[in-house]
Length: 547
Image (cartoon, rainbow, N blue to C red):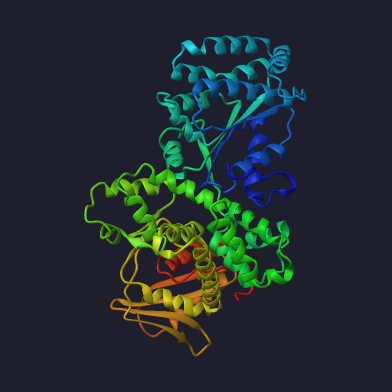
């Protein structure tokens, strides 16, 4: 709705996932069928990846059928569209272009697969007499019947597959699961933006002995990938390093957001790009503050999806609070006199992906959406904020201040940022690497300069010390061994050693850290903690300077 899939020369990154899909697809006719599910939040680039995969895949014995699900489409309409797309994809796979004419397509398909064509015609004619579940079960036979008659393997892509739940089919994934086990000549490639729901379906309904799914979670671009995208795709090298850091922070590395910003910024001359108030700020106003701005419309649509079904108004209040900072469940309860249905409202927000939970904290992980909520939505909703021109002026000032504050944060020494973070801990529960940890409440946090030049961050607590060190490059076994030696030179008992490998950690070093009972907080975990405690993220790439 807001963006077309990006394919061909404009497609960027995702090389590892793309190679995985190509490998799995090519293995199908060799007797090895591995189904794959690609999960990730809305507009993370799933459809672009799938469409680009289709352009890259070449195998005369295999054809790909891409099917999406459309709003308010009846199952009868879907079934007819699916059959049309299936035939078109099959003919394209054998080199017979039909140019989308259904009659010519059917005639061409009949020459190759007469029995399947006759069966399909009979099904489409009688589908009005069948209930939805019977129609669905029958339609699932199409790939298998085609293979038996033609010997051609099928890769069936179902984009936003969880939408099958909206057709009123009785136990749709139980029926789909049975066909997946039987149809070993068909590879299923599923995609979904409803990550939690999709994971539940895959775990409870499609965890099959002979048809299990390899789950690939599509993440935002890494900082390095985002840097390269801005420079190579949109030629934004004139932007200074700190401004690029800000754009990567505020977009979270989401391809769609980076694409919108890059497209608008690419029209500015180099001198303006070097001066954010003359380029970045006007672009943010255009795409976020203006009602016609693409991100303004998108965020408004996301918000309306939730608040239109929330008569209590609690969802909006929670989102407004979380747009300013992370909150505990106790702090959220304190927002309301009446806590009735509050748990249901929070669960719905978590289900939509707009809010995430970590330990005792709830937060909005989408920084750009949070910025829009507090700087655009709330400003326009506040009748005391003046007319639209005054609101625009206030927005521009706030955007400039936000960029300035981020710049100041990014110039801080990393030791100082980690010291501030450790000083914020007050005994909260957080989840790191899928394990729950209670953070300490330190009586003192300090920098330790050892006699041999070691630089450690020390936190004092009753049961002993927390000792931490960070690395900006990829951590090796040698780095861990040196850190352990540094810890030995600390004269007091140590209850916890924390290693912060901002540039990543290789597998051997990871195993050694586990053996030595070190906690390893990689960049994603550290940024999560920095975000929760309001200290701003660390946006860096291996080999890049920090400010």
